[in-house]
Image 1: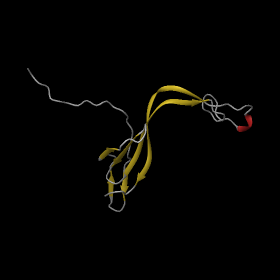
Image 2: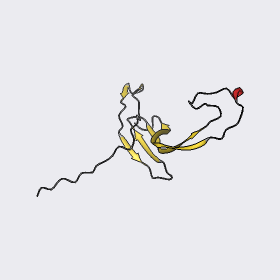
Image 3: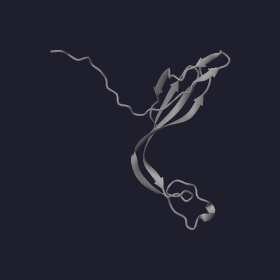
Image 4: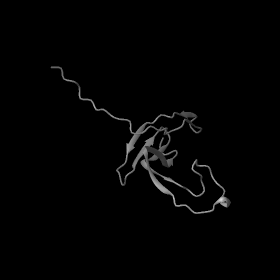
Amino acid sequence: TKSSPNRNEYNVYITFHSHEPEFDYLKSLEIEEKINQIRWLKRKNAAHFLLSTNDKTVKLWKISEKTKRAEGYNLRDDDGIIRSSNSLTNLRIPVIRPMELMVEATPKRVFANAHA
């Protein structure tokens, strides 16, 4: 029998753009938008946190899952267009509704020139 090599399979959890290309004027060097390292941090709540680094910058990211959304804001109509506060005739309480799972990456801190 032919044994297959032990391979790990990974599913894509989220895709996002972490670093932009930039120029280091002190070193006269262009910094690529590549990621050199990713480190997942220990979980403290429902969200995931990770650090991403390129040649110059370290970024802290919050990766969160959203399954609910608020509807019925007072200053926005059903299409999301902002209404004038003068046109309000009654006060509505927003309602939480379920939605399809959305995974979102939010930058929490940027440590520019954090390492060389």
